[in-house]
Length: 259
Image (cartoon, rainbow, N blue to C red; front, side, top):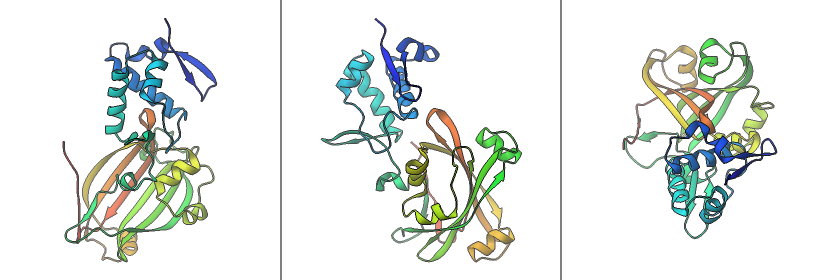
């Protein structure tokens, strides 16, 4: 019997065997996980919405409920889905407090963490440099939205972020929209552009503060800063953001958990 999976993005159905041909030798739960990611990528369930129950998904894919549960467990561990006791399983969103600052790893040396204050310093459309194009899987010269913003904690400038986004995915993004949105930046990307940042890779190194960066942070040029280069991905491992952040770490450190 051939199981059929709907593809809402294209308005057609996909045979299960065809959808899984690239993963034919994967464990069954991994194949179901891949199908669920396909559905998320196609927008079948939006951020914050509930997905069907494990029983419904088991019937849809003609597998056991335990197989579905294992696939959903992995997606929850990867923060793509969120389980809510007694309510079901939901598509993770950056609007949720526990997810909102998942990619911000800066912590105070002492005391309680302070809420970040964000100020957009610039937003313009530019042509992708070779490095930008490589990171975002674009062609050199493709349109890119370039954002510079300042993050302050307790009134102290601490981070300058230079953010680069594919122009084709973020049409209409400008200073007015950025300044008029009160929630987290990744939350705005979800709600306004349908782009979910689901994971990121980072490189850390020390750099001396350039004059313009130092001016934004209110520090002397040439002092050491922590430079964090991040590439953020949406579903199917598609890069949709290049971010280069410069951090003042006199009162902060960059934390990470290794499992």
